[in-house]
Length: 378
Ligand SMILES: Cc1cc2nc3c(=O)[nH]c(=O)nc-3n(C[C@H](O)[C@H](O)[C@H](O)COP(=O)(O)OP(=O)(O)OC[C@H]3O[C@@H](n4cnc5c(N)ncnc54)[C@H](O)[C@@H]3O)c2cc1C
Image 1 (cartoon, protein in one colour):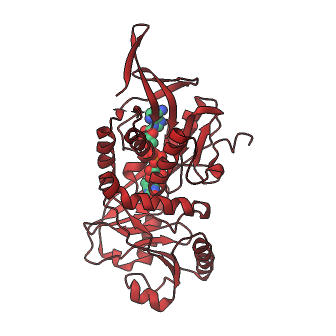
Image 2 (cartoon, helix red, strand yellow; image 1 turned 180 degrees about the horizontal axis):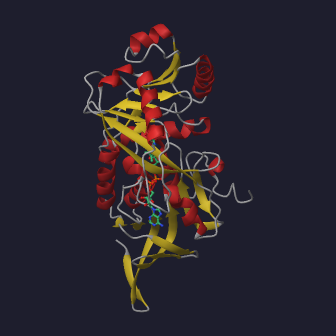
Image 3 (tube, protein in one colour; image 1 turned 120 degrees about the vertical axis):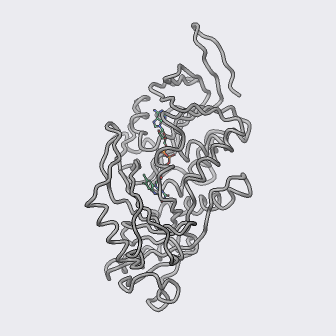
């Protein structure tokens, strides 16, 4: 529990670690730190688990990550697979395997190169012949000229993960302040965090604010450029056939999977419309049609299904598409972990790295390439 103190007539709270942002990175970090005995307070401007972590497509993709992220993705997968047994968190994690597909000769060549490089980095992945594709994945279209298969692709349920993770965090004593935006931060040995509900003090502060990280970094004078993606996802009615794995595309423009009730989820980073300022997350119908057409081209069986709903959500992207993980603005006690592409897959690894950095000052895997200061002089 936090220690309330009184200052200038106002109640102030002291905690060991304050965390800003209640998505997968913030909540998981809060859980890990509280579990190891830290007093943790988490501030969320809206409801916890209501932004990217809640509305994503649930793909736990290893093949669709940038090469430098492969070791981190594999590590994250290990954590995902232990969630239920080690932490009692049931997120319907499924290691279904996955097919990264190509539709043209050029894409097939690109796929071959990337599969070879990913295998070199430790990923279990093999290129399938056309015959093997027909045998293993007859639901893929004859237009699929090549596919790389990895048994390590899979999925989890964002709708299960959120409540289960929040419950686990609360059970460890994390104080969660929903509808409590942080609007100002004063660094120092005890960081002052000014929120809509008053000021709080913490020995350490973690910023896990996803797409909002540029603005939160600016509160500390840090340069953390973030581009906004407004990703769209579509869900169909349940299918009578089975898609046996996660489907991704050599050019990163499609993700497709079937979830437990038989519905298919279609995504791939096609862009909707909106900004952080106007808070809109609207569907762009031209983009959506292209997304669906591509899905039908790859899995023709989808033609028989009605689309039930499409939605969009914010994803923050850095200029080099690698996340920010590390100390912020030269402050020893302020940290950031945000903006991983495919951050649902990578969330547990990011939280583990961040919690290690906060509690031990070092990390299991190196984080130099994620240095938050790397764009300071651009
Ligand atoms: C539509 C869509 C589909 C996606 N599909 C996939 C997928 O299939 N697989 C995959 O791996 N990844 C996917 N992603 C990406 C993934 O969802 C995100 O990378 C990941 O959830 C980011 O988690 P986060 O905790 O960093 O951010 P978020 O979940 O966005 O959480 C950040 C939180 O910080 C809060 N916050 C911001 N500023 C403040 C402030 N000043 N004070 C208090 N709180 C604040 C926000 O309100 C927000 O709740 C998808 C993203 C989208 C949008």
